[in-house]
Image (cartoon, rainbow, N blue to C red):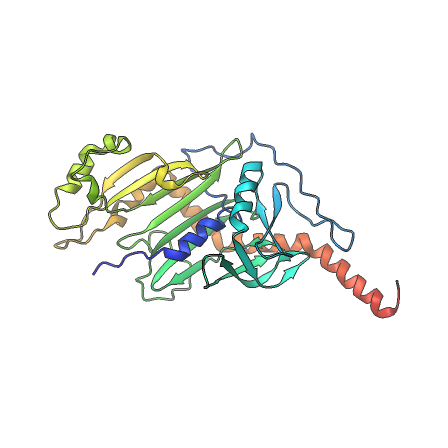
Length: 328
């Protein structure tokens, strides 16, 4: 039986996190090269009990979590991005420690509609997406490029798939390795106006198009769809590339590329990974570069967060020393 990617709660939560994690991502050649035309707003002024403002980066905002007293730091350089983040996080709770009023360390995130929390890591309010997430044989790999998480120039790539390899599943895979039978690639980028643009590559079963009038978005691919529909037994899987704004679901993004998934020899199983590189096209080298540099880039970005908050931690230590010595 062909393994299926069981996204379920994992992908639902990742969708909610996309405004709080560094959702800024790879900038492919077909999109803007960099958001250089957009000026980030100044850092939000948030004083602490030490009389020192939180060392927020330009574009970072605090979003209160559903339970009072703790906040996440989100990268929302535009008001509408912040409002969307606020609406998302008011439905979640952080089950973990807070530092300077910010979610910090290992904890759990729980939604209003679920009794099952999800493990998460926050560093001074910034949620850090794990490099690898394994769920019942499926995996999500998160590749990152940049010097800081919350920055317009940061790049990321997420790859969902089935982990069918026999080696260590905790290691960072390539985005082609995990695309076995059926998968999902997600890229996003800030354009020159400071808006998030996304590219997704999926392999849906489009059997429902075979006996129906084609919607307008598929008419340009009529010949390829007919080729898929001529199959007698196999699922009608096609590799589909969409591009559009992150403010709407990727299902509503225009289809810009589409091709029938080939079959394994003498089987009815789809082998969509054979045309994955063609779907990625001229952006392949950029994707591979992000993948290769991800471990070092993630470590550097984590260090950047700790370095920014070092002065606050030092001020706390100085205050405790003064209290211990009887000074006021």
